Image (cartoon, rainbow, N blue to C red):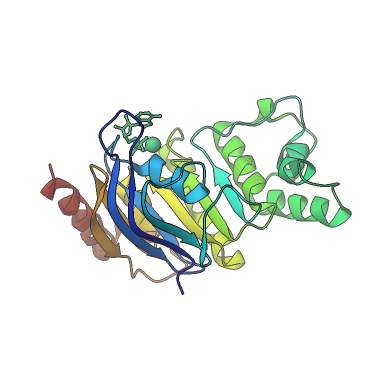
Length: 247
Ligand SMILES: Nc1ncnc2c1ncn2[C@@H]1O[C@H](COP(=O)(O)OP(=O)(O)O)[C@@H](O)[C@H]1O
Ligand SMILES: [Mg+2]
């Protein structure tokens, strides 16, 4: 059984032309899938449907066999901007999703500290996030999304505003964390190299439809050097061709 399954999903914002049409997709448990496509092709809408923030008006969308009714604690989100609260410490920002549901336990604090340590932020636990760089703030947002140990992580262009080297470091860290935790991930990007580096499989979207379904069979762990390999470049070229076919 697929972990997240879309069958013939369609969505239309009231009063506008359809933004998703006839989308079939299957995310097996523990896999990392990327959605790529030009701006406006429907990537964020897909993520909102997967999160239960929007309901499909055609087709079905199931998480672990159940129709998605709304966001649940088994989902984590990371958006393009880290959206941290400057008046809370880094540690308290990471613990916030737990605090919104129940009292924080010592094991939660350990979990948050461990995530922040894995991202090189141990010395910043008690500082305000306002003092952190953009890359460090993105790491805090990832730790915050993972602290509840979500089975599904939904990420919407989380690294788009970062410089290239920081982005590559974060891609490595994210891939390692998700692999270790067997988290299933749906990651939106418009950057084809980011998709090839991170994904097990890539959905290429154009005008609300899936126009390409490309398996990325590069071995893991993927060191930074993989980016310069012929296989990597071939896969990037394949994605680009799928996108350009439709323009
Ligand atoms: N709330 C909304 N109401 C009407 N149209 C919307 C709304 N949100 C997005 N759209 C439109 O839906 C299309 C897909 O948007 P979106 O899913 O945000 O694309 P992407 O994330 O790929 O850039 C775009 O044409 C956008 O203008
Ligand atoms: Mg978007």
